[in-house]
Image 1 (cartoon, one colour):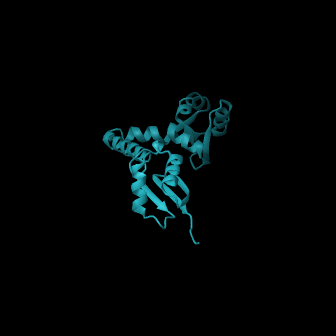
Image 2 (image 1 turned 90 degrees about the vertical axis):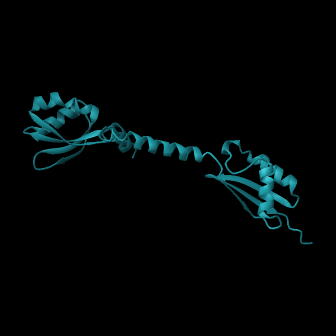
Image 3 (image 1 turned 120 degrees about the vertical axis):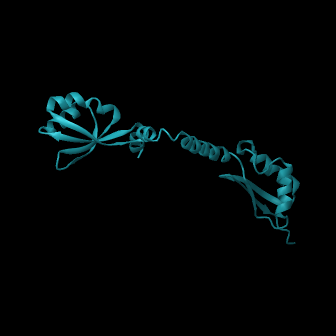
Length: 181
């Protein structure tokens, strides 16, 4: 998978090979460490893929073996960007959108409270906001251990607290002590 991604990022060409000594051409390419992949035989000769950089090294080998090279397709990110070079604002918008999503993912946007029975959700949320933990704050500024300790100090009937960040959500799970006699 990583190799396919690297090929796409660097760009590659799908080429058609025609001529009489195509096997000799492929052997010379292998001898010069020019990597060809997806080599398939068709009616005219061979169809294969090669990296953009290696394509320019094929010319002397093609002349030596009297092989005709023709480019069938250009694929990869460099060619995509070249074909769409007039759409700069579109790509700027996509980049802006990706950066915005990343920046938004660095913040807490929802606080959930689980396990509360004797205390209301609003009461616990009000206390959490008094401790300067609120929606929109950076996840890196959240001190979960301190918040857990402050909740246990404030509410005597809470025996256990866990503050956990999942995605952009702060989940506060509490266990209350039971006074059944």
